[in-house]
Length: 259
Ligand SMILES: [Zn+2]
Image 1 (cartoon, rainbow, N blue to C red):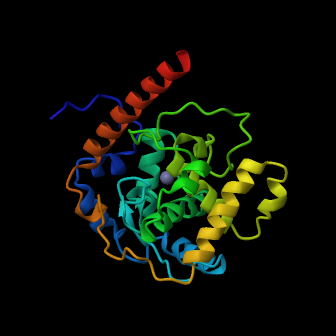
Image 2 (spheres, rainbow, N blue to C red; image 1 turned 180 degrees about the vertical axis):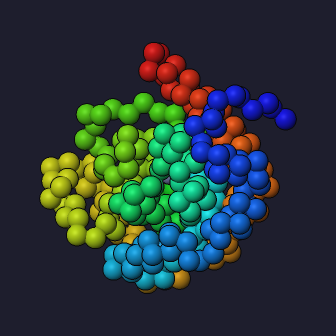
Image 3 (cartoon, rainbow, N blue to C red; image 1 turned 90 degrees about the vertical axis):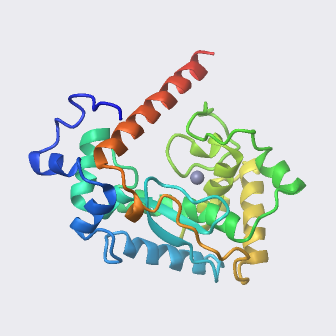
């Protein structure tokens, strides 16, 4: 096992530092953070209402605690990072990484809408037919939305998550467009007026919602990939691996900018 780099966790108060050597599954159990009473629940209920009001009557993505934000491939489910389930874990996340993705109610709701877009895609097995490819583009062979070079002047993408995330990959563009389409009270026709590429994407997503909205999802088997309640690595190991991975993406990103 890799030796812990000194200093990474030194900013943590003693009580939190002690948790770092425990397994994630045990920490969640100990903090009572894996139960349905956790602070994410009300946001999930809210998402279900938003989906229903947007015309998606039968899709209720299975939301569970995972190791990060994602929707498991092919499955109508949403993994929410486990650190959002308890204030102690949120504090650790902030002190170790300097940010908390989804740490405010507004950010949490935006991320849930985005992941609901992937869940819709997976649940209804949306075909990558000619119209899909003409609208969102052809997917590159490697799925790595963490490394991309956005064009901040682009008029072809919705803006929903930070950093022009819709530009990171056609599948992310789809999820971002879906998120905008189901955002309550958002008059996207006006917001994106005159931007035909964006309106084309939104109208396409809307047509998919109309087509599938009153059907039950075709994919109903749920597999909870990276279920945090089963993660046996320690918190320290988790952050060690994550920081190393994010530093690698950062280097790839820098090379992309320099190229
Ligand atoms: Zn995504």
